[in-house]
Length: 150
Image (tube, rainbow, N blue to C red; front, side, top):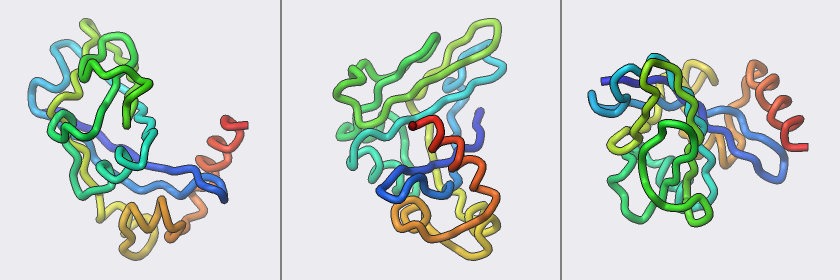
C-alpha cells in the first residue's frame, strides 16, 4: 500500500488552530500505476464532514452520509459535485500516469505525533476545536494561512 502524513487545521472566531496530525493510507490500488508523488488538500466544508474526519479513523467511500468531491487532474472518486460535498479534495500528482483514487483510502489519527508535538496527549477535537495544545512551531503555518485568507 501507499500512504503519507497529513495535518488538520481549522479556522474559527479566533483564527487558525494548531495542527492535529493524521496519517493517510490506501491499499495497493489507491495510488494508480506510475504515480510518483501526490499532494492532496482536503477542505472540510460541513460539520458532518468534520465529525467524520475527527473519528479515530475515516475511510473514503465507506460512509454514505459523507459526500466527497474530487477536483484536479487524474483524481478519481465520488461523482458528487463540490457544491453538495462535505469534503472537497484538491489533488496534484506527478508521474508517468498521474492518477489517484481516494476510494478506500483511510485517514487515521496519529496520537503519538500529537503527544510528541504538544508534550501531552490531546485529541484532534481538543487541538482543532477547543484550541488546546500550543507549540510555537505552528506559528509560521498559522500566519501563512491567515495571510492567504485576507
